[in-house]
Length: 311
Image (cartoon, rainbow, N blue to C red):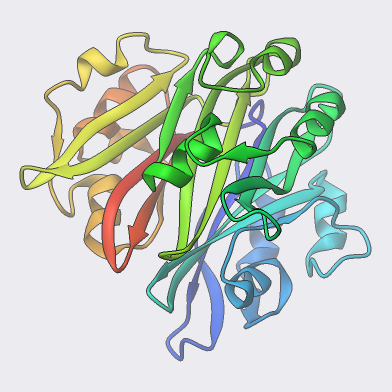
């Protein structure tokens, strides 16, 4: 995870009383001192980054930890973490977990995690709510001035379909409206996940991966079909034949990390893919990948997809 845009991934879950959040799992790479601090923390409703995402009920971006409500700012500064994105996972009105992505500034820190939402002034238009772009200032400016109709662009497509979407080769894609900007910024792959609050309120969380500091080294989308999860789409820097290799793959409920997310509805991580029992874990381990985050996409209490990021 040392060369990835995302440095740390955390999964915060309700404790036994369901009044506080505690650390359920995480991927920390070389940031083990930050992990030790995090394992001792709990967050109440509307407290800290996980608690604020819980209370707000929607994805939340915090572009700077200094002089903010981020409760671990001192230790984050010491290890070089400076920004975070929190994605709450709900089943109806009940919180299942909050996934937190933590990033850090450096000279080669290129990439983007964005939150898009419906424009309050134009009902059929989506605009950038907020995002973290690392060093990509020009790409950030272009994104903040963009207006998307339903079905247009990566966020607009997710808004219309209410399903995750993946685009390879962003710089050459006619579907990605910022293709020229993406090409100049070295962006290669885009993954977008819907966050569905109600029938009328949908957010799109986009992960835009750059060549030198990718968001993740492999992306996969799995959907329920025929009694199992089947492979819908994917991209891997290490395996150009990913889609062909998974054309007939199935994951059973409870099988491996991805199957466990389908069973429980709770995001999960795997810190050693050689120990993952699913075909997805085995194939990823064969090309040298070690870590995985799997997240559910839920609407009206039903699981629509599982998205996996391999870091």
